[in-house]
Length: 405
Image (cartoon, one colour):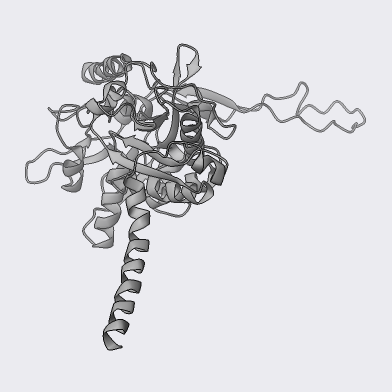
């Protein structure tokens, strides 16, 4: 009897172990064929394979936690569907159509990884997508990719050296040297494949429209007593606010490796420069240093304009066999653009691409970055391969003008 009880207990333990393994194993299985799953769930069931290569990094360092969280909610809404994430290289994204296992069901990539939208299914932009981002995924007049997450650029200032972003940097004196070592107002790192610091500099130093107080013009006869009865005067109409364009020039004294050095961030931390352009990644690092009491007295502020090439683009390859699979992949992309999914970007410290409530109100650094990126935004087309040359040429012009005086 005792041996029978032991066998009974072992049988139950085995059943429980098998039940626990079903979920993880199912995620690795190929898509379900036939109509059995469709009859059970009223739609396609199986594994959606998603390739991820963001190129740039959110403040948290990885997109995967956010994508997994969104996908878990998507799976609960679509029983029998499992979303499988796979981090791949930029080369794999560029060759997504020619893989041995066929194309994935969706790809996430950065602008510049694909020279065209060929091989991607047309998509529809949701009404909540920011107007400035509605055409970044256009190719030959069709929307072939949608942005689902955004990064940005803003000035990070050492408050001990410069308290605010000037309209014109050339009006500020250079910081005093320390131990005969020169210090500079500004440093910008060299461009990287998916971090275009030239474009950030051009936007942050863009001309500004500044309000001007108009001088009130005296009315005819004002101040002259003619001895006439005083009539009631009409309520004066306030004049339209006047503005003027203020050009921004770079500091006259720039580091020798300006726009060519590997790291402006380290120079900022050591107090060698007063201001650098930074992304959410550097802001997060400064937040952590502040928590540890090892950060300089820093702040974040916008400039004359906003630019970002830090776009996480989503596309759906059109090579999948089943139309239902493609439709579900498009539904998954739309899911990433839902307001709850966009709000969850706070978990990785990225910015939303849709209109909606601010995500970082009150959070030092990220709140200012979000505000700087919330206005008129310039962003390159995801399939444009020449915009980097244009941004570099414009930044070269800014440097030449500053050195010419």
